[in-house]
Image 1: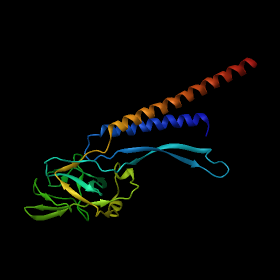
Image 2: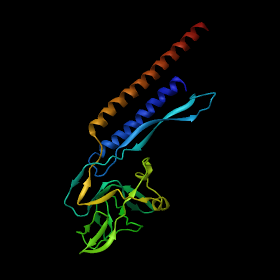
Image 3: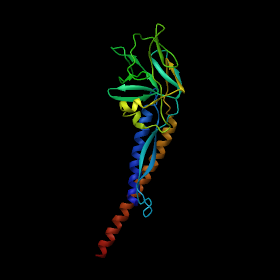
Image 4: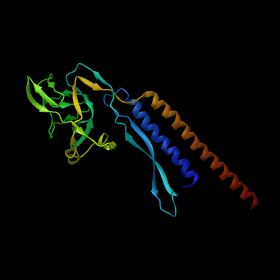
Length: 237
């Protein structure tokens, strides 16, 4: 990889890091939001004869799954997960992992979040309620006037959480393959705060800006050297 390619990769990576930081900052007050962490990955054709020569760094993201602080809201339809695990939400034929959220009943009685995604029961199926004040037990059992009417599923994921599970969702087959979590519980009338630390994001933005400036300086220096070389060869001709 040449000098100009390295500089271009640095600038492109900086742009991606700024996008991720901006998204994190915009969601600092979003309940249950999980911070995205950008990282640089070296990809490309690498063999014994050209180790790293054809490798180009690319910026990818991972989800920082550290739980946020739980805050009481007083709304009995607000839910949070205490400990490990995620609830499953459905939007059409796509399924999303969430650490709870602020929910309400729709016209059919289904429990939905602000984006219209439906809370899923353990074993599958939308959760339907006949009251705005159910009792939801830590194990996910939903009671209406003391009678069980459903059970909210709580699912575990591996340590390497796929960003797509949170952003673009999963297929039904992928959702059915999720294992149930036995290390967490449902907390009613509470929400989990975002785990974004604003000061960390601002420090990261300063570092990213410096990285972009360094890449831009390399490009400018390369252009100047190229111009001088062309001018020098022109005079000799």
